[in-house]
Image 1 (cartoon, helix red, strand yellow):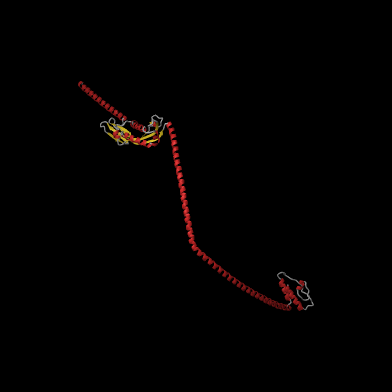
Image 2 (cartoon, rainbow, N blue to C red):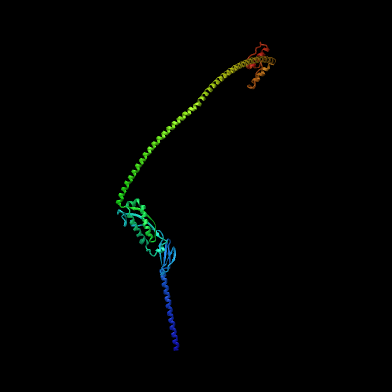
Length: 408
């Protein structure tokens, strides 16, 4: 039992030792994992490169560099280092040099302070980023670009006067700055894109003097242009007078030539007009003679026609008078014969007088009531208030009644 108990005790001890060893290993692995996770959390293996930037990854073991562009890049902690540089254009504008009374104004060759609104646009050379990344400082603008720009600009500004900087040699000044600054920046892998010279701020005293000088120069320039304009006006007036004289001479010559040509044309025309006028005069004489003959012929014809008309009218009147006399004769004969016939008829038929009277009065009187005469005479004698004469024979009385009836 003692042996058995010893064996069991040795086995239990060995198992405890193995368990303790396994626990230590697990703890070590867990600690390593936690440490690795912490390191990775503090230094993530993935880095992001923004748009317009370039990344330069360096290997600490081999010393090689890799150029990375926009996107994600693997950066292992302890093995790689990543540096991000901007490729976008950047602008440097010295703020202390904007005014003549600023912090760091520029100096002219006369020693006067002046301010210039200067803008310098630059960017990194993308072809040299990988090779120059290790030598470039962290703040490229403050450590490299600004000192180079200030050193060149102050040196170039000191070569010119204030007047040249302000007006006459601005383009030359800008070109000189670009010429000196471009190779200096290119040595550090920086490309100069352009320089802009803006407003120039002059000292107050110099500005007042400059304004007066410019005013005088402008007045002198204005006077010079005025005098030149007056001279041009005088020349123009002389030329206009000369041109007017030439024009009048030409007009006079043209008028004289026109008169000569008109006189020649009139003379030439008269050669044809005079015979034509003579022909017209002869034609008018012939026309007058012909008109005279025509009038004489017309007068003779008119007189002949009037004689013929008078003769015809006399003959016509004679004919009319003869016809009227013949008519009156015939009418008288007819009336006499008619009266003789009517007298004979009334003598034979005395009542015809009454009938004739009744026919004449029928459209005016509807009924006539009259007593017959006692003597058997004319019934109308009672209406007319006449009395028949008994002394007259019946035949004579009948004739008078017939005449009375005809008169009525």
